[in-house]
Amino acid sequence: MRRATQGLTAAAVIGLASLSQGAWAHAHIASSEPAAQATVEAPKSVRVTFDSALEGALSKLTVVDAKGKAVTQAKPELDAARKTLTLAVPTLAAGEYQANWVAVASDGHRTQGSFKFTVK
Image (cartoon, rainbow, N blue to C red; front, side, top):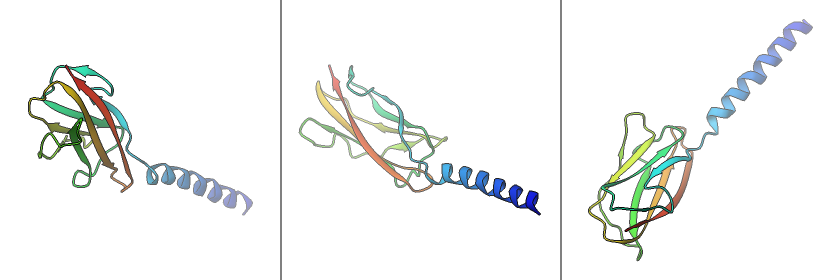
């Protein structure tokens, strides 16, 4: 009886540990193009890759100029792996820009952030 109880306890602990890791996942940035704080030639798109799968309908990516005005009304595309948001942008003039993102992980947890880059 005692061994059965110990076995059930161990199984419960392992099960809860694996459940909690998946249940509390948040999508965080793995990389971006342009990179944060980079000075680049005018990009054709802005791309943000996350470390976990996203809900495409709820995740967002926008780019604004130094005055906070959106540079495009386009919606970002989510890749087949559901980890990379790509936003096509028109030819950007020299200056500072900010990419703003909202990432909703497949488990529903939401993170958000931004990064700046400069076009030469």
